Image (cartoon, rainbow, N blue to C red; front, side, top):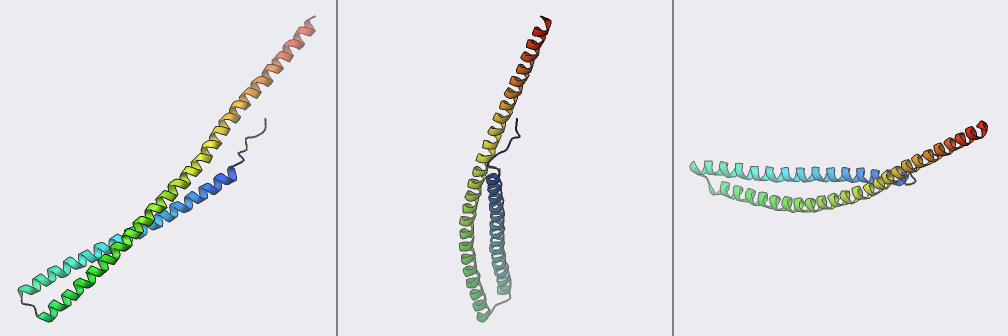
Length: 151
């Protein structure tokens, strides 16, 4: 019997490459989300540090000019925080799209892998049947040959 050949093997390889590419894209997007989260945490940390510093300086009397500087700084931090949160939301939406895309490509690849597995099982079963048939035929021929030579 001839060797097993899966006719969709090139397609399976393409599906695997697409899956790997989508995994890389998902990982890159996750890195962006992590980076954006760290930016937001740094802004919150800067805000807390400035607030603590301002409170310490208020104990020693603070002038109006310094209060205005702190006020503008807080407004700038608040704007940065809002824009970074918007960016994080957009990245999370993109991350979810990439995740769905990866699941879809993995499902497609698994379909072809399952088909290959089923065809291989059928091929092995057919091979066993053909081999059994050949062995039965050889045994039958041998029996017929022995029977005719005994006469």
